[in-house]
Length: 431
Image (cartoon, rainbow, N blue to C red; front, top):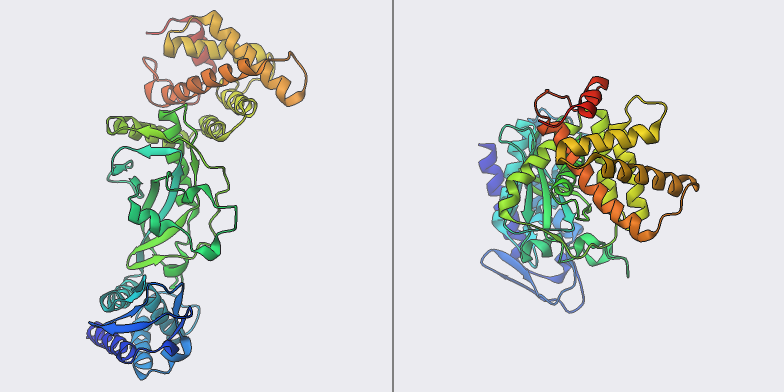
């Protein structure tokens, strides 16, 4: 059997590597000592860095034998190769050695399993990818929250990282710039969004570069951010730097060159999500996903999420008013301030049973404040009034979006409001 021969060849390579430990096998920091026992090669923990010497590994007959067997396995794969299978096989063996060297120990079982799982996955032409992205500004009082339904093509979850996982997420020292440590490596930010999906592959390189269509993973993380903000309108939530893991086969991290980097400020303190709130969080996630099918609500939700990341209340107010405009002024060309205020007060009356006249003045003042901030004309509004308006509007926009998608009572209203719907809401009382 090819896999049996591959496993035996992997054991032979490890045995030859650890047979005579010497510093010539590694590029290591000064003063680091090597020891070998129980089939593992250990480096003194005081070593700052260690990597396998390419010249040493290539000189071993067992390496050439293992690479040849792996090349035969890869040749049976239906995937396209950017280089000859022999060249890919040598690179894979080096990757397996790096993957199996955990901390300061080379582990035989990890090395063999990496090669065997990759060979089998290359024959199937599929892999499971997991996008991991820190959700900044949230603390989950529980280990895990599953957000997607079981039949979804993507499995979406929120995980509360333990201390060991937080350490694994820390970047290497050579990637950190002095004084510019990203907020998503702070130990306070423990919640991670994971988007998992099994993908059919066309090219072998995607095992190491990540899925061919990766933007949809990022969009799912945005839906989670929006769901948290709908649940917690008072929160300030941002997304950290994403990276891909390959979990089936278990290959570890993919290259992250195509993915965006987070650049937002650190957020403190996080908003708490209790286990009792998880059903509401799943409901908010459903709202965020359904809103994508309606341009007006998609735009409103996008502006609502942007407002959640603004540090200045003036910027937050502008985003919120623009979000309301997407819902309240569809297709209108004149009397914008009046219709904005009238439609906003009507929806507030239907959803919250709020008196129409105070709501009308709230929306009228918000529209005037937005015009003054953006265009520089109109009444001057004091900062404390802008703060109070932005806080009230944020709560209202969250409730509007959710009501229009899930809770429109009685009349079967579509999420995209029509002219007749506005007249009914204006002249009739809530059921």
